[in-house]
Amino acid sequence: MSVRRLDHVSVSVADLARSQHFYHGLLALPVLGTGEEESTALARALKVPRVRFRFADLDIGERGILELLEYLEPRPGRPDRRPFDRGLAHFGLTVDDLNSTIARLKGAGVEIWFGPELLEGPAWWAGARTAYATDPDGVTLEIIERPNVEP
Image (tube, rainbow, N blue to C red; front, side):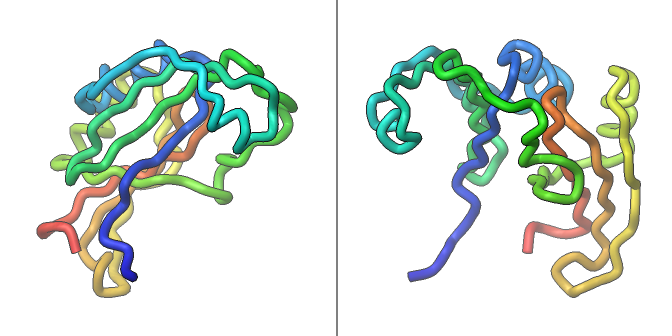
């Protein structure tokens, strides 16, 4: 068995339209599909009586998917529990031009709270430039420009 690639990243969001604007409108990720579902399998997995959600699946390249989920039932719980607080977790998106991506995000009022920073190592990171931002729900996003094809 071996892991071949990142398949998808799933992010719970408070407002699907707002998050779609961020990822599709500002970062230009293509929308693969949207909808609303009720899932008995997910309800069993989460050990709740019912799960209903809106979703948007966006293409992050290399057959990867960013799955945005706005839970309608059950509604998210405690606001003090943020699994994507800075430093706890994040996901990275490779971009063609870090400077123009940063400019676009800043122009829309998004804080770039770290970077751009040139990375020197280890080898698979050497020469990459990176910056960090936060999406509308507080999810940490690392934006990466690599000098060569993906490692």
